[in-house]
Image 1 (cartoon, helix red, strand yellow):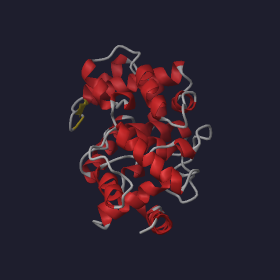
Image 2 (cartoon, helix red, strand yellow):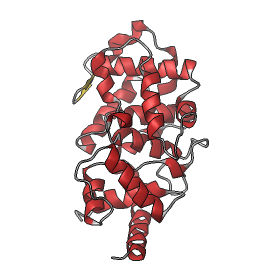
Image 3 (cartoon, one colour):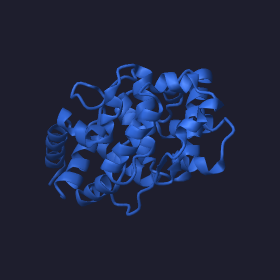
Length: 254
């Protein structure tokens, strides 16, 4: 395919897969259960944090987290005290355990109390037409509180060569327009043009087959290469192609 044909092909696939029927099969279903902006943010952030492995397992673990938070994430975060830490007992998703979850709750409380919330942190640190430096800054602010060193591995840092797949997915959820009924579009201070595609095994393999990527490893440099390719096709909403690349890989086995 030439460039025009490739864009038309991916536009068609993005339109095909960005539909409400995508939601019940995806972890994005968890934040879709809430209406309050802060509930959506916190449910989305925690769900994205544990989004590695089997999607069914991710959804089951995210459901358990929401039960722990009393199905009211923002209220739980803001009213949390050390006396509540027994509520996390036994929680584990792969390497993310009850101690990590407690730290994340405390860190979120710190972000909302001292940094005006998740949206304010990211929108205040957009640089060079990218949110990747903002992710690194967010990680620093997130771990201003006392924490165990092991918990830091659950937040990626693009400035340390990570493609930061999970947090880029969370940012897509919060920022992209909600007209198609999948993403939320609740962060009005962050433009979709600065988003980066969540780079996983499906999106990266399909991108390589289509000639959008030349690098073999999935790291921050590869993400920048994919950013450049997708922004040439749609500078305003480049990450709509996440639906096309993921759908081609995970559903069509392209």
